Image (cartoon, rainbow, N blue to C red; front, side, top):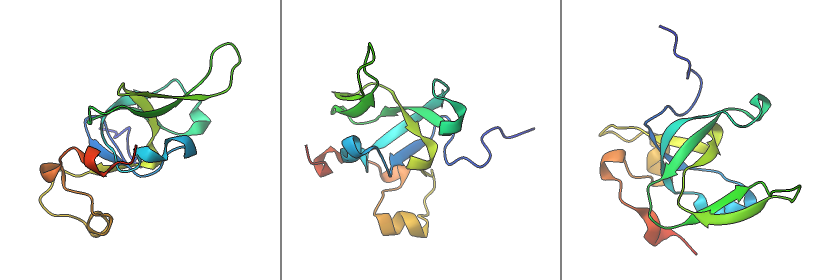
Length: 121
């Protein structure tokens, strides 16, 4: 069987932490999301994007295309959104943390709790 997600960081169903975002959405770094499915609305040359759902109930910024030729704008919501695979780090469902997870201070999936208290709004 061929693994169509080989070489990617995430897979559908994963919990992941956002490790990079657009300048307007930097507050999302550290947010935990669930990877829902591949997002195919962007051009292929932009790389693989996932439709992700934030686990926090707190609204967070999303960069969206304006309508009628308007430029991009930021909206705050808690809806599923597209996020680039390279800007996500999956939280492995394991009892052993790897070295990078320990350095970053990212909790294991089994220890995860809503990080809303860590965010600056």
